Image (cartoon, rainbow, N blue to C red; front, side, top):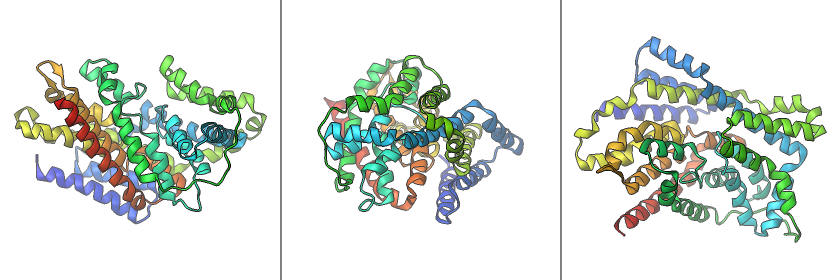
Length: 404
Protein backbone atom coordinates (compact mmCIF):
# COMPACT_ATOMS: atom_id res chain seq x y z
CA UNK A 1 0.00 0.00 0.00
CA UNK A 2 1.50 3.35 -1.05
CA UNK A 3 2.61 5.74 1.70
CA UNK A 4 1.35 8.61 -0.45
CA UNK A 5 -2.12 7.03 -0.42
CA UNK A 6 -2.12 7.02 3.39
CA UNK A 7 -0.82 10.59 3.54
CA UNK A 8 -3.67 11.74 1.30
CA UNK A 9 -6.22 10.11 3.60
CA UNK A 10 -4.57 11.83 6.56
CA UNK A 11 -4.69 15.16 4.72
CA UNK A 12 -8.44 14.80 4.13
CA UNK A 13 -9.14 14.29 7.83
CA UNK A 14 -6.71 17.02 8.81
CA UNK A 15 -8.54 19.52 6.60
CA UNK A 16 -11.85 18.47 8.17
CA UNK A 17 -10.49 18.94 11.70
CA UNK A 18 -8.94 22.33 10.85
CA UNK A 19 -12.18 23.64 9.33
CA UNK A 20 -14.18 22.45 12.33
CA UNK A 21 -11.70 24.15 14.67
CA UNK A 22 -12.07 27.35 12.62
CA UNK A 23 -15.82 27.11 13.41
CA UNK A 24 -16.87 27.11 9.79
CA UNK A 25 -20.51 26.07 9.46
CA UNK A 26 -20.80 22.32 9.23
CA UNK A 27 -22.39 22.34 5.76
CA UNK A 28 -19.58 24.40 4.23
CA UNK A 29 -17.03 22.33 6.17
CA UNK A 30 -18.13 19.08 4.56
CA UNK A 31 -18.36 20.61 1.09
CA UNK A 32 -14.81 21.96 1.45
CA UNK A 33 -13.53 18.61 2.77
CA UNK A 34 -15.12 16.85 -0.19
CA UNK A 35 -13.33 19.29 -2.49
CA UNK A 36 -10.01 18.51 -0.79
CA UNK A 37 -10.59 14.77 -1.27
CA UNK A 38 -11.40 15.18 -4.98
CA UNK A 39 -8.31 17.30 -5.59
CA UNK A 40 -5.97 14.97 -3.69
CA UNK A 41 -7.32 11.93 -5.56
CA UNK A 42 -7.58 13.93 -8.77
CA UNK A 43 -9.26 12.00 -11.57
CA UNK A 44 -9.89 14.70 -14.19
CA UNK A 45 -11.89 17.93 -14.15
CA UNK A 46 -14.55 16.51 -16.43
CA UNK A 47 -14.96 13.37 -14.33
CA UNK A 48 -15.14 15.38 -11.11
CA UNK A 49 -17.75 17.68 -12.61
CA UNK A 50 -19.71 14.59 -13.59
CA UNK A 51 -19.45 13.32 -10.01
CA UNK A 52 -20.95 16.56 -8.70
CA UNK A 53 -23.67 16.59 -11.35
CA UNK A 54 -24.62 12.96 -10.75
CA UNK A 55 -24.68 13.53 -7.00
CA UNK A 56 -27.00 16.52 -7.32
CA UNK A 57 -29.38 14.84 -9.74
CA UNK A 58 -29.54 11.27 -8.42
CA UNK A 59 -32.60 10.12 -6.51
CA UNK A 60 -30.50 8.90 -3.57
CA UNK A 61 -29.46 12.48 -2.79
CA UNK A 62 -33.00 13.78 -3.05
CA UNK A 63 -34.31 10.87 -1.00
CA UNK A 64 -31.84 11.84 1.70
CA UNK A 65 -32.72 15.55 1.56
CA UNK A 66 -36.46 14.91 1.59
CA UNK A 67 -36.24 12.24 4.30
CA UNK A 68 -34.31 14.46 6.70
CA UNK A 69 -36.58 17.43 5.96
CA UNK A 70 -39.73 15.37 6.56
CA UNK A 71 -38.22 13.93 9.76
CA UNK A 72 -37.60 17.46 11.02
CA UNK A 73 -41.12 18.44 10.00
CA UNK A 74 -42.68 15.50 11.84
CA UNK A 75 -40.58 16.44 14.87
CA UNK A 76 -41.97 19.98 14.75
CA UNK A 77 -45.51 18.63 14.41
CA UNK A 78 -45.02 16.35 17.41
CA UNK A 79 -44.01 19.38 19.45
CA UNK A 80 -47.02 21.40 18.25
CA UNK A 81 -49.48 18.58 18.97
CA UNK A 82 -47.93 17.68 22.32
CA UNK A 83 -47.18 14.14 21.14
CA UNK A 84 -43.57 14.38 22.29
CA UNK A 85 -44.55 15.00 25.90
CA UNK A 86 -47.33 12.40 25.72
CA UNK A 87 -44.90 9.79 24.36
CA UNK A 88 -42.33 10.59 27.04
CA UNK A 89 -44.91 10.45 29.81
CA UNK A 90 -46.25 7.11 28.61
CA UNK A 91 -42.74 5.64 28.61
CA UNK A 92 -41.52 7.22 31.84
CA UNK A 93 -44.57 6.35 33.89
CA UNK A 94 -45.24 3.09 32.08
CA UNK A 95 -41.74 1.66 32.59
CA UNK A 96 -41.45 3.30 36.03
CA UNK A 97 -37.68 3.65 35.72
CA UNK A 98 -36.03 6.90 34.66
CA UNK A 99 -32.84 5.40 33.23
CA UNK A 100 -34.62 2.59 31.41
CA UNK A 101 -37.09 5.12 30.01
CA UNK A 102 -34.31 7.41 28.78
CA UNK A 103 -32.57 4.50 27.03
CA UNK A 104 -35.82 3.19 25.57
CA UNK A 105 -36.64 6.47 23.79
CA UNK A 106 -33.73 6.58 21.27
CA UNK A 107 -33.52 2.77 21.15
CA UNK A 108 -37.17 2.47 20.16
CA UNK A 109 -36.77 5.05 17.40
CA UNK A 110 -33.60 3.20 16.37
CA UNK A 111 -35.72 0.29 15.20
CA UNK A 112 -36.54 2.42 12.16
CA UNK A 113 -33.62 2.61 9.70
CA UNK A 114 -33.74 6.09 8.25
CA UNK A 115 -31.15 8.78 7.52
CA UNK A 116 -30.76 11.17 10.42
CA UNK A 117 -33.30 9.18 12.45
CA UNK A 118 -31.67 10.34 15.69
CA UNK A 119 -33.48 13.65 15.14
CA UNK A 120 -36.73 11.91 16.06
CA UNK A 121 -35.50 10.97 19.52
CA UNK A 122 -33.38 14.07 20.21
CA UNK A 123 -36.34 16.18 21.45
CA UNK A 124 -37.46 13.27 23.64
CA UNK A 125 -34.02 12.85 25.21
CA UNK A 126 -33.89 16.61 25.73
CA UNK A 127 -37.11 16.42 27.73
CA UNK A 128 -35.99 13.65 30.10
CA UNK A 129 -32.31 14.35 30.90
CA UNK A 130 -31.56 17.10 33.41
CA UNK A 131 -30.20 20.01 31.37
CA UNK A 132 -28.84 21.67 34.53
CA UNK A 133 -26.55 18.71 35.22
CA UNK A 134 -26.00 17.35 31.68
CA UNK A 135 -23.68 18.98 29.15
CA UNK A 136 -24.68 19.28 25.46
CA UNK A 137 -22.09 16.70 24.39
CA UNK A 138 -23.57 14.13 26.80
CA UNK A 139 -27.05 14.82 25.43
CA UNK A 140 -25.60 14.14 21.99
CA UNK A 141 -23.75 11.02 23.09
CA UNK A 142 -26.72 9.54 24.95
CA UNK A 143 -29.11 10.01 22.04
CA UNK A 144 -26.57 8.96 19.39
CA UNK A 145 -25.28 5.87 21.19
CA UNK A 146 -28.57 4.23 22.09
CA UNK A 147 -30.01 5.07 18.67
CA UNK A 148 -27.46 2.71 17.08
CA UNK A 149 -27.53 -0.39 19.28
CA UNK A 150 -29.59 -2.49 16.82
CA UNK A 151 -27.60 -2.12 13.62
CA UNK A 152 -25.49 -5.21 14.25
CA UNK A 153 -28.35 -7.58 13.46
CA UNK A 154 -31.76 -5.85 13.01
CA UNK A 155 -33.10 -7.24 9.67
CA UNK A 156 -34.57 -3.89 8.62
CA UNK A 157 -31.17 -2.23 8.24
CA UNK A 158 -29.93 -2.10 4.63
CA UNK A 159 -26.42 -3.12 5.68
CA UNK A 160 -27.65 -6.49 6.96
CA UNK A 161 -29.74 -7.03 3.84
CA UNK A 162 -26.75 -6.15 1.64
CA UNK A 163 -24.50 -8.63 3.49
CA UNK A 164 -27.10 -11.32 2.87
CA UNK A 165 -27.02 -10.54 -0.86
CA UNK A 166 -23.23 -10.30 -1.18
CA UNK A 167 -22.53 -13.64 0.55
CA UNK A 168 -25.76 -15.36 -0.46
CA UNK A 169 -26.61 -16.28 3.13
CA UNK A 170 -29.85 -16.09 5.09
CA UNK A 171 -30.43 -13.01 7.21
CA UNK A 172 -31.26 -15.38 10.06
CA UNK A 173 -27.67 -16.68 10.00
CA UNK A 174 -26.33 -13.13 10.26
CA UNK A 175 -28.68 -12.41 13.18
CA UNK A 176 -27.56 -15.56 15.01
CA UNK A 177 -23.89 -14.59 14.79
CA UNK A 178 -24.20 -10.86 15.54
CA UNK A 179 -27.13 -10.22 17.91
CA UNK A 180 -24.98 -10.25 21.05
CA UNK A 181 -23.07 -7.13 19.98
CA UNK A 182 -26.22 -5.16 20.75
CA UNK A 183 -26.02 -6.20 24.41
CA UNK A 184 -22.34 -5.28 24.47
CA UNK A 185 -23.28 -1.81 23.14
CA UNK A 186 -25.96 -1.40 25.83
CA UNK A 187 -23.43 -2.38 28.51
CA UNK A 188 -20.81 0.07 27.23
CA UNK A 189 -23.39 2.84 26.93
CA UNK A 190 -24.44 2.26 30.53
CA UNK A 191 -20.83 2.51 31.76
CA UNK A 192 -20.40 5.92 30.15
CA UNK A 193 -23.82 7.34 31.05
CA UNK A 194 -24.34 5.89 34.52
CA UNK A 195 -23.71 9.26 36.21
CA UNK A 196 -26.21 11.17 34.06
CA UNK A 197 -28.96 12.92 36.03
CA UNK A 198 -32.61 12.97 35.04
CA UNK A 199 -35.27 15.62 35.46
CA UNK A 200 -36.98 15.58 38.82
CA UNK A 201 -40.41 14.06 38.48
CA UNK A 202 -42.48 11.51 40.34
CA UNK A 203 -43.44 8.23 38.73
CA UNK A 204 -47.22 8.03 38.54
CA UNK A 205 -49.03 4.72 38.55
CA UNK A 206 -51.61 4.10 35.88
CA UNK A 207 -52.34 2.53 32.52
CA UNK A 208 -50.19 4.18 29.88
CA UNK A 209 -50.22 1.65 27.07
CA UNK A 210 -53.00 3.40 25.13
CA UNK A 211 -51.23 6.74 25.47
CA UNK A 212 -48.03 5.10 24.26
CA UNK A 213 -49.75 3.70 21.16
CA UNK A 214 -51.50 7.01 20.45
CA UNK A 215 -48.30 9.05 20.65
CA UNK A 216 -46.02 6.53 18.91
CA UNK A 217 -48.34 5.20 16.21
CA UNK A 218 -46.12 6.72 13.52
CA UNK A 219 -43.22 4.43 14.53
CA UNK A 220 -45.28 1.27 14.03
CA UNK A 221 -46.80 2.79 10.89
CA UNK A 222 -43.35 3.44 9.41
CA UNK A 223 -42.01 0.01 10.43
CA UNK A 224 -44.99 -1.80 8.87
CA UNK A 225 -44.78 0.12 5.59
CA UNK A 226 -40.99 -0.16 5.36
CA UNK A 227 -40.62 -3.78 6.40
CA UNK A 228 -43.96 -5.30 5.48
CA UNK A 229 -44.66 -3.49 2.22
CA UNK A 230 -41.14 -2.24 1.33
CA UNK A 231 -42.45 1.23 0.46
CA UNK A 232 -39.89 3.99 -0.14
CA UNK A 233 -39.06 5.97 3.00
CA UNK A 234 -40.00 9.29 1.36
CA UNK A 235 -43.49 8.04 0.51
CA UNK A 236 -43.87 6.62 4.02
CA UNK A 237 -42.89 9.94 5.62
CA UNK A 238 -45.22 11.88 3.32
CA UNK A 239 -48.06 9.54 4.26
CA UNK A 240 -47.24 10.09 7.94
CA UNK A 241 -47.32 13.86 7.46
CA UNK A 242 -50.65 13.72 5.62
CA UNK A 243 -52.20 11.71 8.46
CA UNK A 244 -50.97 14.26 10.99
CA UNK A 245 -52.38 17.09 8.86
CA UNK A 246 -55.72 15.31 8.53
CA UNK A 247 -56.05 14.61 12.26
CA UNK A 248 -54.86 17.87 13.85
CA UNK A 249 -56.42 21.23 13.01
CA UNK A 250 -53.48 23.10 14.61
CA UNK A 251 -51.16 21.40 12.15
CA UNK A 252 -53.37 22.37 9.19
CA UNK A 253 -53.48 26.00 10.32
CA UNK A 254 -49.72 26.29 10.86
CA UNK A 255 -48.36 23.90 8.23
CA UNK A 256 -46.52 26.62 6.27
CA UNK A 257 -44.92 27.98 9.43
CA UNK A 258 -43.97 24.45 10.52
CA UNK A 259 -42.52 23.75 7.07
CA UNK A 260 -40.38 26.89 7.15
CA UNK A 261 -39.09 26.16 10.65
CA UNK A 262 -38.15 22.64 9.62
CA UNK A 263 -35.89 23.72 6.74
CA UNK A 264 -32.25 24.42 7.50
CA UNK A 265 -29.95 25.49 4.66
CA UNK A 266 -26.82 24.46 6.55
CA UNK A 267 -28.20 20.94 7.02
CA UNK A 268 -29.06 20.74 3.31
CA UNK A 269 -25.47 21.68 2.38
CA UNK A 270 -24.19 19.06 4.81
CA UNK A 271 -26.27 16.31 3.20
CA UNK A 272 -25.25 17.35 -0.32
CA UNK A 273 -21.58 17.41 0.72
CA UNK A 274 -21.78 13.91 2.15
CA UNK A 275 -23.46 12.52 -0.97
CA UNK A 276 -20.87 14.10 -3.27
CA UNK A 277 -18.13 12.69 -1.02
CA UNK A 278 -19.66 9.22 -1.16
CA UNK A 279 -19.83 9.27 -4.96
CA UNK A 280 -16.33 10.74 -5.25
CA UNK A 281 -14.92 7.75 -3.32
CA UNK A 282 -16.44 5.45 -5.94
CA UNK A 283 -15.64 7.54 -9.04
CA UNK A 284 -12.04 8.29 -8.06
CA UNK A 285 -11.10 4.61 -7.99
CA UNK A 286 -10.12 5.01 -4.36
CA UNK A 287 -9.81 1.27 -3.68
CA UNK A 288 -7.61 0.60 -6.72
CA UNK A 289 -4.69 1.95 -4.68
CA UNK A 290 -4.85 -1.24 -2.61
CA UNK A 291 -3.83 -3.46 -5.48
CA UNK A 292 -4.67 -7.18 -5.69
CA UNK A 293 -5.27 -8.47 -2.15
CA UNK A 294 -4.95 -12.03 -3.43
CA UNK A 295 -1.18 -11.46 -3.56
CA UNK A 296 -1.01 -10.31 0.06
CA UNK A 297 0.23 -12.54 2.89
CA UNK A 298 -2.35 -14.22 5.13
CA UNK A 299 -1.48 -11.85 7.97
CA UNK A 300 -1.95 -8.84 5.69
CA UNK A 301 -5.29 -10.18 4.47
CA UNK A 302 -6.54 -10.52 8.02
CA UNK A 303 -5.31 -6.99 8.67
CA UNK A 304 -7.41 -5.80 5.74
CA UNK A 305 -10.49 -7.43 7.26
CA UNK A 306 -10.14 -4.89 10.07
CA UNK A 307 -8.50 -1.93 8.35
CA UNK A 308 -10.56 -1.58 5.17
CA UNK A 309 -14.07 -1.64 6.68
CA UNK A 310 -12.92 0.66 9.49
CA UNK A 311 -11.47 3.28 7.12
CA UNK A 312 -14.47 3.13 4.79
CA UNK A 313 -16.81 3.28 7.77
CA UNK A 314 -15.15 6.52 8.83
CA UNK A 315 -15.06 7.95 5.31
CA UNK A 316 -18.66 7.13 4.35
CA UNK A 317 -20.36 7.38 7.75
CA UNK A 318 -22.95 4.73 6.83
CA UNK A 319 -23.02 0.97 7.28
CA UNK A 320 -24.24 0.23 3.78
CA UNK A 321 -21.27 2.31 2.55
CA UNK A 322 -18.48 0.23 4.07
CA UNK A 323 -20.38 -3.01 3.41
CA UNK A 324 -21.06 -2.22 -0.24
CA UNK A 325 -17.54 -0.97 -0.97
CA UNK A 326 -15.34 -3.41 0.96
CA UNK A 327 -17.23 -6.67 1.50
CA UNK A 328 -17.25 -7.78 -2.17
CA UNK A 329 -13.48 -7.21 -2.14
CA UNK A 330 -13.02 -9.05 1.19
CA UNK A 331 -15.28 -11.95 0.22
CA UNK A 332 -12.23 -13.85 -1.10
CA UNK A 333 -10.93 -13.88 2.50
CA UNK A 334 -14.22 -14.31 4.36
CA UNK A 335 -15.39 -17.21 2.20
CA UNK A 336 -13.17 -20.19 2.99
CA UNK A 337 -13.53 -23.48 1.13
CA UNK A 338 -16.81 -22.26 -0.32
CA UNK A 339 -18.31 -21.54 3.11
CA UNK A 340 -18.80 -18.15 4.78
CA UNK A 341 -16.74 -17.81 7.94
CA UNK A 342 -19.20 -15.87 10.12
CA UNK A 343 -16.51 -15.09 12.70
CA UNK A 344 -14.46 -13.25 10.07
CA UNK A 345 -17.64 -11.64 8.74
CA UNK A 346 -18.47 -10.41 12.26
CA UNK A 347 -14.89 -9.16 12.67
CA UNK A 348 -15.16 -7.08 9.50
CA UNK A 349 -18.60 -5.81 10.42
CA UNK A 350 -17.75 -4.62 13.95
CA UNK A 351 -14.58 -3.01 12.54
CA UNK A 352 -16.55 -1.15 9.90
CA UNK A 353 -19.31 -0.15 12.30
CA UNK A 354 -16.72 1.16 14.77
CA UNK A 355 -15.61 3.46 11.95
CA UNK A 356 -19.23 4.46 11.26
CA UNK A 357 -19.80 5.35 14.92
CA UNK A 358 -16.65 7.48 14.96
CA UNK A 359 -17.21 9.05 11.55
CA UNK A 360 -17.61 12.84 11.45
CA UNK A 361 -19.55 12.15 8.24
CA UNK A 362 -22.21 10.16 10.12
CA UNK A 363 -25.50 12.01 9.66
CA UNK A 364 -26.96 11.08 13.04
CA UNK A 365 -23.83 12.29 14.82
CA UNK A 366 -23.61 15.58 12.94
CA UNK A 367 -27.33 16.36 13.07
CA UNK A 368 -27.60 15.45 16.78
CA UNK A 369 -24.51 17.55 17.49
CA UNK A 370 -26.13 20.50 15.75
CA UNK A 371 -29.43 19.96 17.56
CA UNK A 372 -27.83 20.03 21.01
CA UNK A 373 -25.23 22.67 20.04
CA UNK A 374 -22.38 20.44 21.18
CA UNK A 375 -18.72 20.51 20.15
CA UNK A 376 -17.02 17.67 18.32
CA UNK A 377 -13.98 17.76 20.59
CA UNK A 378 -16.16 17.15 23.66
CA UNK A 379 -18.25 14.47 21.97
CA UNK A 380 -15.16 12.49 20.96
CA UNK A 381 -13.82 12.59 24.51
CA UNK A 382 -16.58 10.15 25.44
CA UNK A 383 -17.31 8.60 22.04
CA UNK A 384 -13.74 7.46 21.30
CA UNK A 385 -13.25 5.48 24.55
CA UNK A 386 -16.78 4.06 24.22
CA UNK A 387 -16.16 2.74 20.71
CA UNK A 388 -12.72 1.47 21.73
CA UNK A 389 -14.15 -0.52 24.65
CA UNK A 390 -17.04 -1.78 22.51
CA UNK A 391 -14.57 -2.94 19.86
CA UNK A 392 -12.26 -4.68 22.34
CA UNK A 393 -15.14 -6.54 23.98
CA UNK A 394 -16.59 -7.50 20.59
CA UNK A 395 -13.24 -8.87 19.39
CA UNK A 396 -12.93 -10.87 22.61
CA UNK A 397 -16.40 -12.36 22.08
CA UNK A 398 -15.63 -13.21 18.44
CA UNK A 399 -12.38 -14.93 19.45
CA UNK A 400 -14.02 -16.93 22.26
CA UNK A 401 -16.91 -18.01 20.05
CA UNK A 402 -14.50 -19.05 17.28
CA UNK A 403 -12.64 -21.50 19.54
CA UNK A 404 -15.68 -23.00 21.25
